[in-house]
Image (cartoon, rainbow, N blue to C red):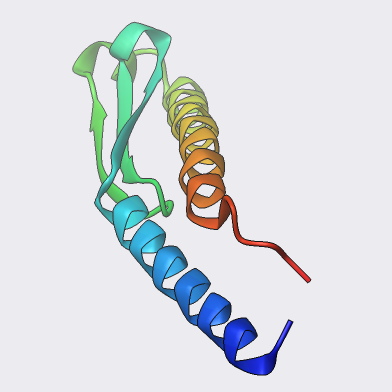
Length: 98
């Protein structure tokens, strides 16, 4: 493989990865805990956009609220990880890696 061809492939990969990163930053995900008592909205780049805590969980105490937030975050992160794998896999598909 000549250097010019290699450079063209590198530029193509860079463009595809940049487009994938942009897509991830615009993809929103909801992490949900305890039947919706806590909902976290985040991007597929893990940027938190908002958190909703329903009043009924507040009476359960601080530990319950903390657990609900953690559960909702983990749910959102798991969903984001799946999307990241898919989007980045699509971006690099067909491009031979050295």
